Image: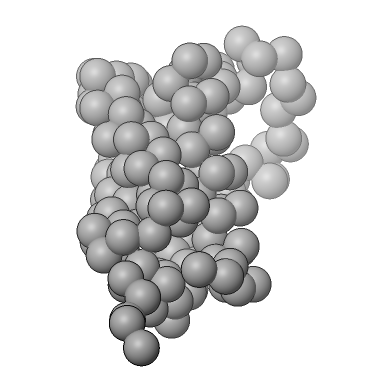
Length: 161
């Protein structure tokens, strides 16, 4: 079946997501989520969620190149898993903003990256900014889900004429 612009967007998105996921699994020290979850004793949960999301994103790429009806369900599940992973991290962050901030700073220092100034850190690690970021992430994933839904016919077998 011909790949539309929407399918190409989905291919690029899911490949990028899978590469990002494997990078975080191989080098958790570059993942702020790992530091935040580890700071409250949930480091293992990071790996469970990241592995599940990685597998779903990778299988999604397969189904984008080899469309089958099951692929549609896999793509939606990959998006839901990513939203759950982000939501868990945001909830942990909001429950301990000072700890999340410290985890972020430690992660940046270990990577040799600069730390933002105090005012920027206060803005970033506020409940309103975190909630806004979470809402924007939900909106983005909803947009990707819309592209999946709009291209659902791509995953159906061709009809005989």
